[in-house]
Image (cartoon, one colour):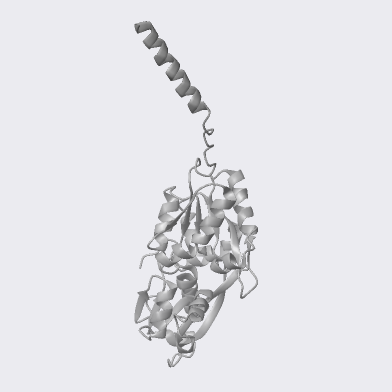
Length: 295
């Protein structure tokens, strides 16, 4: 009886195992899910939450194109993205020219692409010095002894090149200014100038145009005193990143042709760049004391 019971149990186990084998075959792991996420950092040239939302469609595009997870990181300030890259916490970063030359002192990185600007049709865009439209300030030299707003101290078009234009007009920062304000972002600078809480400010031209188009800023209350062409924001990768993956990332940028996505990324298209494109930014950053800035 006991032998029959053991035999019956054995047969039952065989049936169960065979039954399991007749089910669906195990699903292959999603190739994207099995790889470590590609970590992408973005400088907060506007409020960080706005930037992350703005680049979410790009994250989705890159994740789909590369068939691997992509994570976005936006720090509270420009220095935070430099710090993350220097500590090997990022694979790719969207820097300004100044942030790039600061970061390359601390990390082994190189630029791969930048946007072709819609306004200029080149890889360069405008940095502006602006003032309230009814201000008695007529030209940059009139800013001497006034209150001036920069964005983030690490911003190329909101800090480095406004200093360059002020310096060209004979104004030394901070000695020749009544007060220096760091607003933290281009949107805040535009608001400060529009509301005349500062006498003048430095800002990225295309961001100001976007703010005006959205109605966030009243363009009739702002005048442009001077502008200077600046090399576009570089997308940068770690030198140690797999070269095959780097080539795929470059191709992903060059292949973007969706008008909506390009508009979100403030680009007409994308073009390759090298370290040489940022020689002027590095030279002026050294001259104006912004490679290791202190407020």
